[in-house]
Length: 215
Image 1 (cartoon, rainbow, N blue to C red):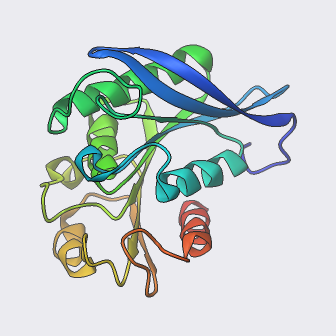
Image 2: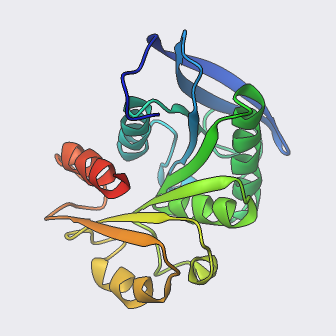
């Protein structure tokens, strides 16, 4: 179980994935001497607004899941960092996420699979979960429901955890409040009081919300 004591030494490995637009730059957090029973893909925020796999929210999500025993893969969408290609309005980025998930499938074929994302990355992760039936849990941080429909969430039976900052002025809580009731169960919504879009000075509270939400 991922909630038990975790054996092995944590390590962060740079990896290069073979994406549909060329090489994809990625970082794998795993433990040697431990056969992971859980893996997770974490998708970063919008590439055109400075989003990378090193974003502090994406990093905190990844480290939180790694702390539960997951092998976690963060990656740069096409056109970001050393990843080949150019921004593709979400379609190519979904293909990049599929490549990341396939890497984890091959490395840990018997592990359970989760998908997570922050802001733009949560939109990509939501469509990844909707199109890949073996994704068994979805974690959405500050989903941009004001710019994307998240239509798949209305029928997706995958368990969903949504974390929203109450002082987010980019992905505003009132926008989420309008659409969240239409999303399919099972689902959980956790608010982080007074948190901005980037959870400035409240990354620990973000981590606590994730842990509490998936218990």
